[in-house]
Image (tube, rainbow, N blue to C red; front, side, top):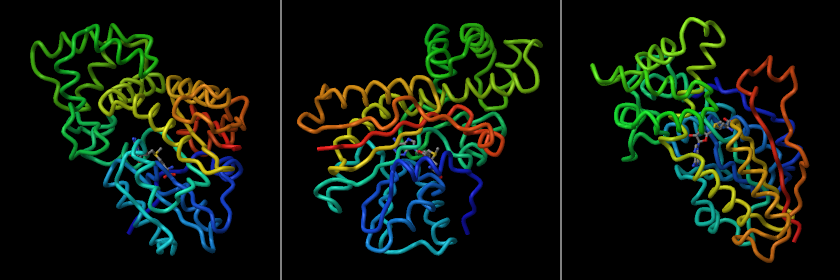
Length: 310
Ligand SMILES: C[S@@+](CC[C@H](N)C(=O)[O-])C[C@H]1O[C@@H](n2cnc3c(N)ncnc32)[C@H](O)[C@@H]1O
């Protein structure tokens, strides 16, 4: 039976901006463990539909289990193991006019981070994988750290992890693998910690290694390109009065949301020519101190919302 380790971020704000009501069709485009869906789904009843997507087949299974465990599994829920970049094709069968709401909660779930065998963090000694969908034939984190040059690795750590010691870490990785390939997440965590030295201990060390693993995950899954494409197709998939809510956890992601929302509002986005949008959040909504205490993962979250007006 499913259990919910993952605490969903900004549930009250998601409900406020998504505004789920009876009879409406809402897409949870990153259903994960189903945390947001558990809050959204009852508000769509009677008569509504929740379409849930996740690129990770294990999360689709877990979301189904969590919905069942909470008595919310019914014909009104449609789950697909698909990337949100496929959104228009998936929803076409359910809503010709578009969706009333779409939620994209980017990044990784606690279940993925803490499950052994995934390679998303240094907390287990796992093979360096970090693919959301482990059946997908794409280069893993192991292939990246064992093959890329110092310059390429440093660019990944800087760009996707905002890591200030990117080059030093990249050099240490390349020096280490001259002796033997880097095989496990623990091994990589230790190389990173040693590279930055005794200055970084405790919490700082945790953040440091977390940033490197985040960067590798984003690179492995080509996350920023997918995210950019996903927001464009989500905007295109909204019905009139439909709303898109996006939660991001990294400066590069938030920049993409801000710029695409602004372009949509100004009528400058090719994909949605002729449609009219209004940004509902002039500034991103960030978590309260209380939410961060309850859920440290919310620390870097930024929520933005937009409505299709015409
Ligand atoms: C932060 S979690 C979502 C958590 C969820 N909102 C909840 O409350 O349980 C993000 C999820 O997005 C999924 N994901 C990442 N890239 C995706 C993509 N391109 N399309 C669909 N899902 C994706 C991940 O597998 C992960 O399960």
